[in-house]
Image 1 (tube, rainbow, N blue to C red):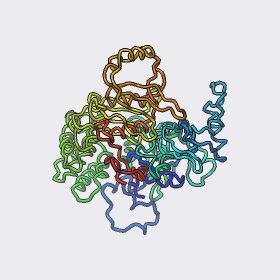
Image 2: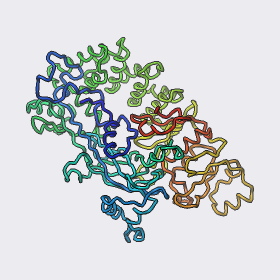
Image 3: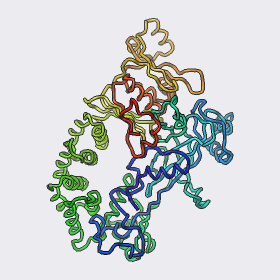
Image 4: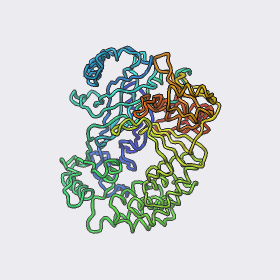
Length: 622
C-alpha cells in the first residue's frame, strides 16, 4: 500500500459515492503515514512473491516496518442534517426516507417543546420552511484519531430538492455514523462523531455566471466534526508469528512507556495483530507517533542501536534516499544517537546536512543544530527553506529564530511569509502576532473564527484558511480601508460606503437613539455598514466604523446580539465564508490595498474548478 496517498484522494472516492463534491483538505490530516513506502510489504504470505537478494532500504531494514504495517482503517462517516439561516434559498421538500430521522433529531434538539419555549415551532414546519435545507454530510476519520479530534465536514443539498444556496447557513447538531458499503446494520448505526457549524461555501463563486449556481449547493464545515470514540489502531504482521508479535509488543511498550509503569501501549492480540494505543503525550500529534513506531528498530541490545544509527548516517550520504524515513529512525531511538547525527551536520550534501540538523533539533540539540537550520531558513535560494522555517517553529529554544522569523514575515514570497507567521504562532510570539477571537460566545465553544494581525513592514496581505480552524491573517498593522467604498458584492447582502462627517443636529439625533455612540468618529469621515436581513425586505441598523480592515471584520463576523454591558447590538452575523467573500471583493476593487491569498491545500482545484480565475491570481490553477 502506498502510504503517501493523501487524505484528499480518499475523500474523492467517498464523495463520488455520495454524488457530491471534494473540497480542500490539509495534508496534516492524512490518515496515512508520511515518509513510508509499503509497496514492497504487501502482507502476502507467499515468499515467492518477494524478490530474492533484494537489499532492503535502510529506513525499513530492522525496523518494525519490516515486519508489519498499520492497517489503514479510516472511518468514512456521514448522515443527514438540517441547515438553517438560508432566507428563501432553502427548500420545502422532505425526502421520505429521511423524514422520521430528521424530525426525531429536531425534537431531541428541543424544537416544538414547551419546556424550551419552542412549542409554536413544530419540527415539521422547520423542515418545510424555505429558510432551511436538508443536506448530506460526509467526512473521514483517520486511523488512530483520539476522542475529541476535530475535522472538516462536507455537505451538499440533497438531490432533487430546490435548495438554491447554502451560503450563510448553519448546520444544526447532527450525528455521523459509519458510511461504507453495505456493512452490517449494527456497524451502520454506530455513532462515531457529531458535527455542527456554519457552512463554508466557495467565496469566489459569482452566482450570475453560468454553471456556478450548482456549486452554491455544496460546502464544508471547518473543524465542525468532533470525534466521539478513540479510533482503533492495529499493526498487521506481514507473516503471522506469535513470537514476533510479542517481541514488537515489548519493544513498543519499553520504548514509549513511562519509566516505572507497566504501560500497555501495544498488546499482541494474536500472531497476526498487535493493537496500539496512542500515549497521552502524543494525543495532539498522533500521526507522528505512528511514524516513530514504524521506524523503531526492533533490536536495541548489545550496541544494536548505535550500529543502526551508523548505518543510517552512511545511507544519508547516498543519492535518492528517503531522508525523511532515515531521520525518523534516528528520532525513534532517541538522544543516544546524537554523536552520530552530529557528524552528518557537516556533510557536503546540503539535504543530508539539513535533515540531520532538523533531527538534532527534535532531540534537543539546540546549540549545534540550531545555527544550521537557521542558515537554511534564511536562504531564499534553498529548496529546503520552507521546511527549515517550520522546524524553527517547533524549536522555541532556538532564540535567534525569533528575529529571523520576524524578518521573514516581510518577504515578497507569500509562501515564505505564511510559513514564518505559522512558526511565530507555534512559538507563541504574541508580540508579533496579535490574536482576536471573533464572536467568542462561551469558554466551552470555539470562536466563529480567528483574526491574527501580524506586525509587518512588507506589503499588506490577507491570508484566509479553508480547512481546520477558520482564520484570517492580516499582514501589516492598521490595514486601511480606502475609497472607493461601494464594492460589488454578489447577492447584494451587504452595503459598505464612505459616510461624510455628520452635522451637530444629526449627531444629537443619533445620541438620543444610542448614547454609546462615538461622537469623535461621527465628526470625521467614516465607513457605514449595514446588511440585508435574509428572508425579509428589511435591513439591519447601520454601523459606523473607522477606515480599518480589522474593525470591519469584527462588525461583519460578530453575531447580532446585544452586549451584556451596554445592550448595544455588536455585529451583523455574517459567517466566516461570507466575510472571506466580502474581503476578497474589497481587495479586488482596491478598497483594501492588500493582496488576497487563499490557503492552498491538496484538491483545492476540485472545489474552485468552475470558478473564473480572472482578477484572482492567488487562487489555485484550474
